[in-house]
Length: 70
Image 1 (cartoon, rainbow, N blue to C red):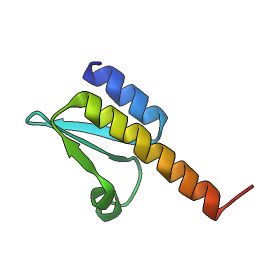
Image 2: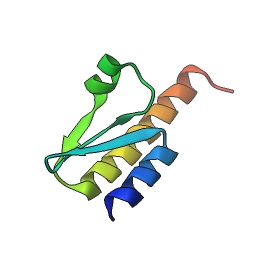
Image 3: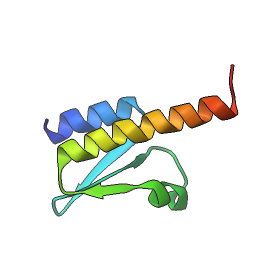
Image 4: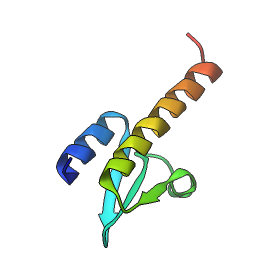
């Protein structure tokens, strides 16, 4: 997977992907800086970044559903 594909997929989950000096950072889009940093995941592997982003998004959705069931 290339960076563009990874960014697009993670964006569809409400996540951001940043790459600096070969290190990827995954976190939630639109969150306050301190909160986003507290949950950010850092890795040097793009596949790990995407997989972790998927898990983070799923866990966030489940937590959100549990605290606000419809």
